[in-house]
Length: 197
Image (tube, rainbow, N blue to C red; front, side, top):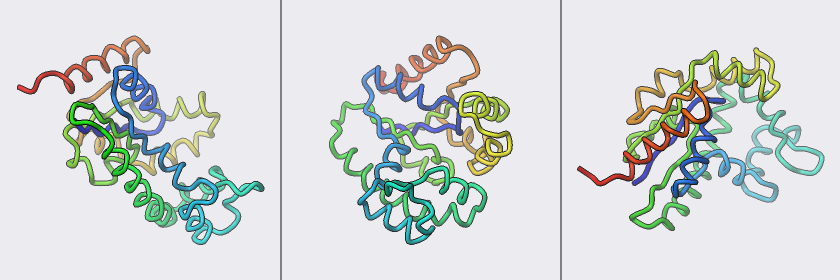
């Protein structure tokens, strides 16, 4: 069973994926892979530097994420340039990881930009972690120390809440307590792993 897991920034998607892993799912984390493919010494990092210049590197040669973020979140064309470099490299890693799963495994793909990618139909199910936009912004202000302007720009850079909900086969509301969230994830997990009708 191949599942796409998505949700807007600060929706709680990481918490949901951690609960699914506890329940035995194999997690393929798009964010982690996106970091992996631009680590020092990789062709991905070399292409990012060629495209965006040496100012996107830290003094020790790693990707300076805040510097790159300031460029790509302020300019959609630049963001698309970055995605054109990173997305194909991530996809290659995903194919490798999926090939190692057994037919009985629940393979959860944590993909922040699933609605944007147009790949929702390639999964057996799509789970969307959902919160109102104002909740996303509040969490970025309080938990990540962002300015309201930065937080709102990041929300605008992603698909809308409505676009994400339109691709969902399962919705996990994350406006309640952690216990509420865990209960809902257990329900969705049972539905995904239960006997096929």
